[in-house]
Picture 1 (cartoon, rainbow, N blue to C red):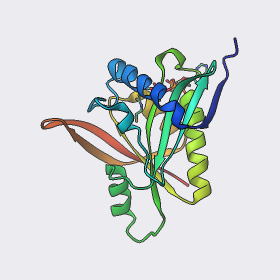
Picture 2: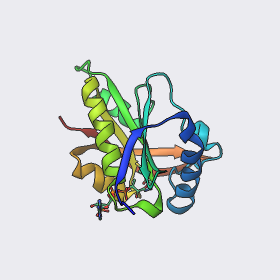
Picture 3: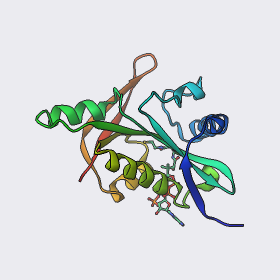
Picture 4: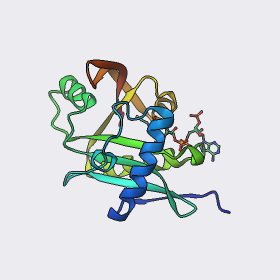
Length: 170
Ligand SMILES: CC(C)(COP(=O)(O)OP(=O)(O)OC[C@H]1O[C@@H](n2cnc3c(N)ncnc32)[C@H](O)[C@@H]1OP(=O)(O)O)[C@@H](O)C(=O)NCCC(=O)NCCS
């Protein structure tokens, strides 16, 4: 059996598999922290958004998205720190990989695809990550992302969790 992971744009027919995978990842890793009562809705994209899936042995095994209209803390922080720059900002998010496929470079390949797309569009890429998600943070830093500040993610009924905002240096 090939251990190669393939990346391609997400299609409508992938959504059920992505939603199931997201529920599994939340149960195991607590990502996303606010839970996934409606996983399909959480994966919805607006008109400017893009998403890619990783396929392993032909099945959906990972996901990442890129969105222009984001209220993420990293977008706000980057804009506040770069008020003199007009560059469009886009946010990378919804990154998760099946526990069964981890360590095979799926996240690395998904991130590279999203970063390549963002670069082609001339977008400044940013992202939010929770401090508990150490594997993700290591991956971002290896790919050239730079921490631009700390954030506090608020969710549920008054719950808070510390995080960091990253920007892709270029
Ligand atoms: C973070 C996450 C996406 C990483 O997914 P992944 O596909 O396992 O990541 P990769 O395989 O690309 O890289 C992970 C590790 O495997 C190693 N690796 C990559 N390719 C490999 C290969 N062919 N053989 C062995 N190891 C490999 C990498 O060096 C990396 O090592 P590290 O943990 O020491 O940094 C995954 O752990 C996940 O879904 N976590 C929960 C959700 C989450 O935290 N999302 C991010 C929110 S911001």
